[in-house]
Image 1 (tube, rainbow, N blue to C red):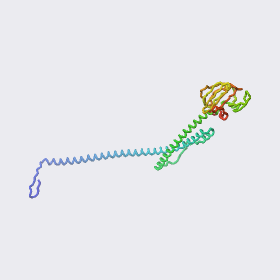
Image 2 (image 1 turned 135 degrees about the vertical axis):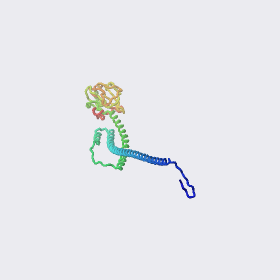
Image 3 (image 1 turned 180 degrees about the horizontal axis):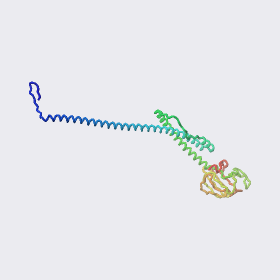
Image 4 (image 1 turned 45 degrees about the horizontal axis):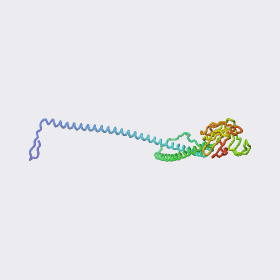
Length: 321
């Protein structure tokens, strides 16, 4: 019942008797629902917190592992950089040795005296020996590493330039050596027989048959019948035939206007058109043709004009090929 003011009517509500049980039950259910909701919210919040914590812990461990890995990689890179710097220094040292060798090769290609270059070769220092090392381990700073990187880059850049220049020099030296080797091979510097007994030199002499002055166009070298006769330079055989005056004769063309002749042979071991190498056996010493006895008449011609062979004969057969 509701009693308003004095001048108003009283309002009455009549509730059934069962409502006395229903209303408390509803209130109880609402309270139970509220507390259950609070419980589940707390449980979900706790689980979410645990999940987030586990995720954070996993990410933290992963991050720590990554940092550790990066630190190890950085240390390895620093070690590799130091090794690279040391290798660059060693390479620079080797490059200096190669430069010295290139200089020696240039001298060899320009000089005709092998003994001079052999002394220079022996003067090259051997810097490849291993040495023992020791000392305290002192960590390097980032500034020192940066400076090492800069110095290594500059050193490697300089080495690349030196290598390119050296390759050009070595290529030129190789070409000069090949040319020098070719010139040595076609220059008649060998003695044609093993004995160096000269019986008649180049120039005017008394003819052994007529006794009159005559021009001797070569050298007469004494030897035994059947002694080996060698090519004094590489070339091509342009004549291998019998001549009434020179007997069995071989003429070899060495290019550049130089030819050599081997006369009075007992036997010819090469034929016309064959190529011969310096020091190759080409015939046997004899006394065919206009000859007083076993010997070799040896000639050198330049542009088909006989010249004195003596200045050319500077090497024994075993000394040069």
